[in-house]
Image (cartoon, rainbow, N blue to C red):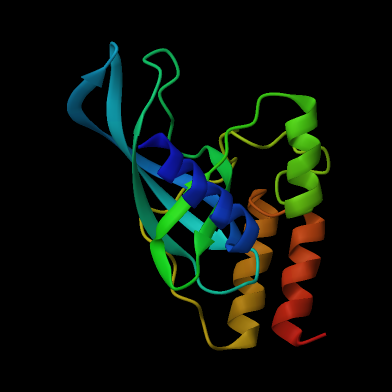
Length: 165
């Protein structure tokens, strides 16, 4: 059973698209496994390639002393054809953070220390619609930068994407 899940996760890491997953909600399923709760974690996933954000849920068993919180951000790999097929990584050591920086750039800070941290901006409960107007997109990106949700480097990269530079 676990071998199939591991193989699927390895495949997503090798061939899947990458994004930043921000927890927008956690629901208890009422089930426990070895005294740990089984929960449904809802993520807003912002693809690194700039495609529109989407929401997806993952049912997981978590430690009862480390239940995920809304606003926490994690690296995510997902199937671009099936957004319900995704995995996220929890990192708790310097080597893991270095690997995340190598794969995700500075999406979690230049040293990867933002993995698992609560975002400083409020988390929306639904994925935002992608505006078609470039000026509107730039205004929204600037608002995210000013609120601290985007770093200056992330803002510059997204601005270049919107402007086609």
